[in-house]
Length: 467
Image 1 (cartoon, rainbow, N blue to C red):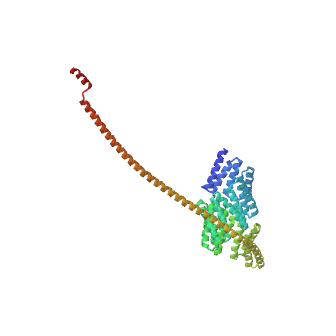
Image 2: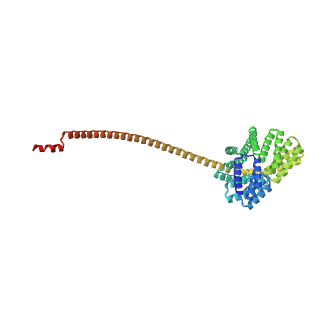
Image 3: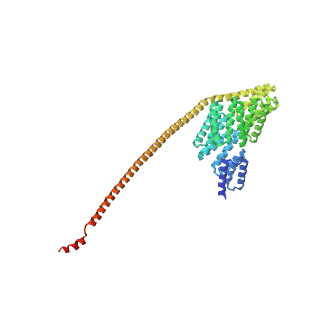
């Protein structure tokens, strides 16, 4: 019973992963039904992993259990997946240290097993954490290593996601043209592979660039495109991100009620998935909107909550925004001492980021050089391929011409041979006719001769009579 079930599970998994012909709920229900009937430990661990991936289960206890079971059963690939998910959960909680710890454990397993696709994913995840921490050199290093492997194995989806991350770095470096170029390259791959999640990320990030360029109408269009795709995929984290972005745009436009509605929608989803960094950001945005509406008590309440959570997470960018918001709230409500203290903290955090920005600037030239170097290599390769293609076409034309000329020569030669054979055959027929005429004449003369001359018997009869 186990062997047929195993084959059915693999077939089912292939169907889910590549066709996506069923809804997420149907998939989870089907797998849950299979889990009840599965008796082999290995099969059960695999099914639980697939359920976790499909249902996007974000509980540490769930993946810790799968990690322990897969380690016990020596299922390295499942163990690596579980470690990745644990790292992802810690990353969402703002615990960068733990996230890196688990991502690197996953990376080690992928290196040991030689699973290049998993290796590229782990490298990309580690790069993402360093990116969030502001360590751009390390982020770039891991992103580029991931991209190189994905190009080696022709993992189109992976290449697109690497391009997304690299484009984001360009965007943060204010290199808009190269950022958009990378986004558009990724966009084409996502369209080819019909990856709605990837398209959503692409549209969202491109919208952010247009927003920074103050092209608000285009930014809203792209943010709404991203939201529509994300609602189709059902990823709560991505949907919350789109709500937040649309809230920010409407906030800047002065549509405070609409902005507040989007921010609360974002906050509700962030809480559902326990995404602490997103929760902190939502608190800050809501506090800032209430400040504009002159609802100072509500504004201070939400901003304070954002500050507590931001300090817990330790992300400088969050702290800068929150300290500035609180300074403005205190100033507006007449608490000038509090406004001064919060502004001092804002300056401190801002200076630390400014120093980091200076360090990042030194990376920018290297990043630009690496990009242009790769572009030059690609162009050179394309030129070589063009020359080889033209040479191949020219050779093929020569071969075709030679074959045609050869065929023409053969046809002409065959015509002359045929004509010569025809003449020879006619001459032979004439000679044969002449020979026949001569033979007929000889035979006729012989018959005449025989008719005129007396026979031997006749002579023999006549001879005695003369005596």
